[in-house]
Length: 153
Image 1: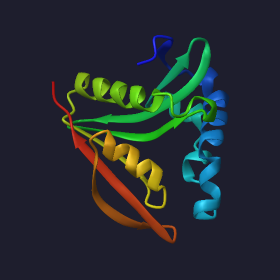
Image 2: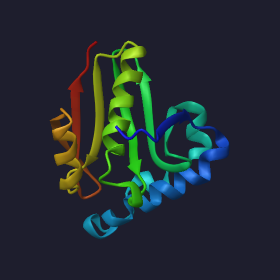
Image 3: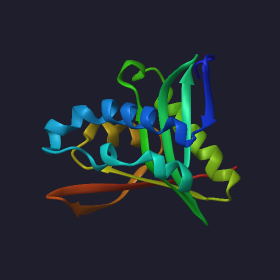
């Protein structure tokens, strides 16, 4: 992990920065699915009050976002986004490791996430990180890949 990487919980003051980072990270997928991914439309001024949203900083710059719901037995990653200039530098892996740690602290035994089935690069990345495809479900003319992995101490 990058020695200059730090994490902190997001606040409502971070909402615009989170939305801008998410938009930049997901823009490349618009041409793949023919629309904006739903994550690009999330209202983080509300989400930071109801979900666990962590920010990753490379030195002082916002580099990534982890948005997750912690539930009894499992944690669901709703958004994992890394700013384009920081992609391929281990920040996504660090955010997933952070998610595992937070899930374990909350008593979860399973991590879950979903991604558009057309996002082959994402599916490959998550598989490398220990996730398996649990199922595909129809969604807006395409499919969503529901993925999970067990976590333990």
